[in-house]
Amino acid sequence: MSDTTTRIIRAARGNERTAKSWGAEAAKRMLMNNLDPEVAEHPEDLVVYGGTGRAARSWEAYDAIVRTLDELEPDETLLVQSGKPVGVFRTHEWAPRVLIANSNLVGDWATWPEFRKLEAAGLMMYGQMTAGSWIYIGTQGILQGTYETFAAVARSLGRDSLRGTLTLTGGAGGMGGAQPLAVTLNDGVVLIVDVDESRLSRRVDHGYLDEYTTDLDEAVARVVAAKEAGEALSVGVVGNAAEVFPELKRRQDAGQLTIDVVTDQTSAHDPLAYLPVGISVADWKTEADREPEEFTRRSRESMAAHVAAMVAFQDAGAAVFDYGNSIRAEAQLGGFARAFEFPGFVPAYIRPQFEEGRGPFRWAALSGDPEDIYKTDRAIAELFPDDKALHRWLDKAREKVRFEGLPARICWLGFKERHLAGLKFNEMVASGELSAPIVIGRDHLDSGSVASPYRETEAMKDGSDAIADWPLLNALLNTSSGASWVSLHHGGGVGIGRSIHAGQVTVADGSDLAAEKLERVLTNDPGTGVMRHVDAGYEHARDIARERGLKVPML
Ligand code: NAD
Image (tube, rainbow, N blue to C red; front, side, top):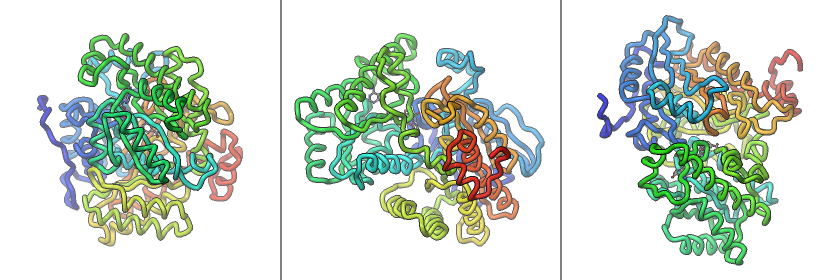
């Protein structure tokens, strides 16, 4: 089936499976869930989020993956190469049911033009992070991380919350769309700019954005009034960030408003997924396809103007940070020399969490029943009674987060914490308290699973930012520990040539075997994060390793 523009994909729900193991069934349902129109940004193109992050290379490949997973024996492993199923091998029950490699290119060839040539020849796809590894759960997947980042921004400003502050950002897509809710959960006011009106209206429909307008004057009036009143409010405005950011700086210079925090999550990692000034949304794809090199030049030029405005806000006293989309590197290529004057969010706010192996742990209920997630929420609260921030998050998530696709939850847990959650969920499946298995995974943006010098490994203490042995070891270890599927990707988050990262997903089906696998995977996976930071010389990671019993031969 190749003419598939009208296909609507939705994962099966419930406790009956058509595949021969829960590992294969879960992989199939999570692939389908990634393409559910409630979850994916552009499901008709197999695009899940993050510019062109795809779940499968083509609809033919998608159909073949689904068929193969249904036929896969419990001691077989399916290999997927850039979104296409390429082989099935006899392994054993402890082995992953699926091994995935997406978008990987040899160093000297790792450029967007080379990648696009191979993609056009039907040989590759861009997997982003959780798109091609089948563990995207909608905008919630980044919400807690974004919420915690903005909480850290508030603390860095000497405040308890963002009340009475105004944040400016760009990009209301699959991940960027979490920003407005994350700011209002921190009691602040946010103005978010997106060129594509349909993205802003989707965020309003899904409860992530309060309102949007096409009129900048109106948007400014709304946010200024809310800031003065100390009210939490998120306002979207349709416009090109490369024009709106400099215009807002002019208005700030004229005394019309003061912006306190500035960041951005447009799809800047891919110059063809960032719209340059002077091109309309309607012409975007045609122009990018017609002359990709010229489009890239114009897009970088616009990013230079966009980032120049961000630096100007920093000069004027705002807290400014790069939110993991590589916009500084692109702006520098566009000719703006001061692009790297503001920091990335990981060294600025997140690294201490990575030292503990903490990162965006997540799970989804294969039953499709929201009650199953509420039960796991309560279980997590009971497992970690003293973690106030976690309790506050779980309460807010229950109240504010609408599920997209299969009900799911995210929460940041670390080394010697995640396995407790996994084992508890498995017991709850076994006892029938939960009505179907739970899928447990994480983002690739995690403490031990990624090498990304403009993001997760920016400014490492020992200068090891670009060393990619770590994510390879992470993937090999998860494969050896019992994960249900393991993935190894290149280029996620920050674009081709700039990152290498790994993912794992493990299924809690209530069996004793699942318990053994979960205990190992969910201890070892975050353990590699602590190991990586011990090796780089972080004191807190060393303390964590000693306190929690991580064996590091040369510590
Ligand atoms: P997306 O493609 O779903 O959304 C990007 C949005 O940017 C779109 O809505 C698009 O219309 C808008 N946009 C493009 N050019 C614009 C311009 N010139 N002005 C205003 N808006 C413009 O992508 P996403 O999933 O939201 O991810 C956004 C970026 O964030 C990507 O670069 C991604 O790699 C990165 N990312 C960061 C993190 C993190 O933790 N910090 C996590 C995931 C993704």
